[in-house]
Length: 412
Image (spheres, rainbow, N blue to C red):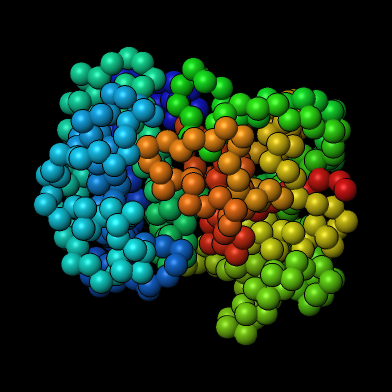
């Protein structure tokens, strides 16, 4: 139950257990970093796609303390004033270290962060405070809003630790590598979804919802055909074999510019981390957590950018789904074979607010990224089950290929 999508409506007792579960998971993943990097002082390259490990860890505790322990308006839920004066942190330097709104990404490598033991102690103390306050909280959605927000925020950062480990080539324990490997897919033909009027967005009174999921609005959706599962390696290899990475006519102009810069800088003409491609078998050799791994032709394509997904669709005479189409299929076509949750899936949709959007107190979550990012739907193997909602909107810049992302297609 504590790792179920029903956690969006969970009460205090289940939330308490889930918050402890999330913290255990975070610390377990961080333990992998500790094993690999503590001997070198957690020094990692300065990359736009990751955070320094000690910053990532401390930020999880800071966020929870900022929005719960230090927030005197926490019982107001989404009516909380985002910039009201907070109580002092139990760590005097917490805001200057871990406030993502005040500490620019590129400066996080230069911070004199506390050591791993001190960060772990901070996470323990802030969680104890959170759980004590949760015992005294009310039972309504407003009273529990920030506890649910902090739970899902920590789950997102746990997945960031997972894809960060992939980026850094860290060797993980065998059970984690197995858990972080996409399953083989039982392939079936596309699904035809009838025309409908769809109520898009998370309804009020249904428990927790992220601000970019609100408000509910009706969309008329014509009949469409959508793949039952994400595009596989065997399908993508055909595109590579047909010169897809050398044919400018298949690429969005910005995507072609991205590809040329990538080829000049890295010499890469294929998906990220791929070392070998078996044209006959459709299998690939992809580096997974620092080790080469043979991935079968019926496993989903992974670590491709939006530009690559869009180019494959142009080559195949298809298109990326609109997010409303994906959502309709996820809700209505599961019994006909529509499968999701293996990899994050790029949508054809740019990340924009729904009609009537109002930002929630955590203003930096959605609003700054509207118009520049692309939407991904679904989940990956590294996503906690309680995060897996058909209405959840993930979003990244179109060049991001470090996350556990793939795609599926629709008929034109």
